[in-house]
Image (cartoon, rainbow, N blue to C red; front, side, top):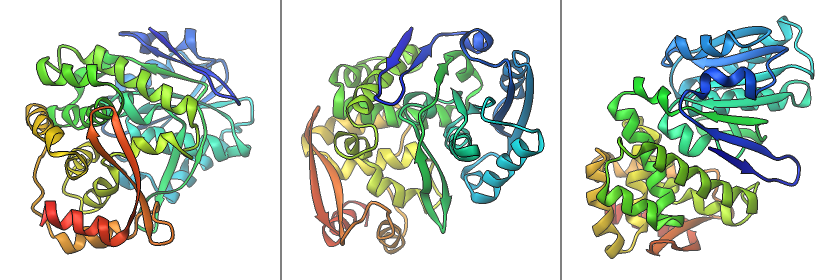
Length: 333
């Protein structure tokens, strides 16, 4: 399946197909120098499969984990390209999860003011969320994604076959973002989570999630309006993530609960439990509030939050910091 992304400054296709990893050479322009960015948690067979289809491949494997989204690793990628004589006609390919995509995309956006970038996500989380939309970034000063750029890929290849090597926890972790998408934009998808089997219907879940996000990005590429809705669950989620006890999707799952109406919460909690996602947080609330106070989305002591009175009927509100902290204490203390 090909899902087109139509944007004013450049359109591209997202191909969702089992086995498409082995067709990368047909769908992407790899007849040039190619920096393939992957991480130590991604099976080597995936990056090697892409490299085998490149004219001049250079594989850079970074350590697995959020720590690799740093200026020092970003510098390593740029140094790698400089060392091998990359110019504006060459490209970068991310093969892995969200860390690889964010990091490689930012390097591509920055090197020589921008060279071609392709994204090949290999986790549920990156397939349904981070590979779509052009957000690239690294962390800095203890703040997640504070340095980055909106830089759209030239193409995205999604091969659900790569999920066979994913651990159960990482599989569930990625589904949280799909649940978020279903609550805000796609009630049909939410019903799949309620009554279906996520493993058996993963292709359908990916398709629904990607199509929903594409519709949002096409209307608001740089998060000036509608795209802010995609932050549902993230304001509190990012604070929880900073504690280091949970994966990103698990944090989003927890962050959605306080922002839902009681009626939605009654439906959401069983879904999260079914997907082996957390529904309770028992950490230090003071540390959580301190982390939330450093969210980059705060402006003038206020932050835009998304609340959900009904599925597909979100409300965008400006909350004072105190309002957010009170809600966090109410649910997490």
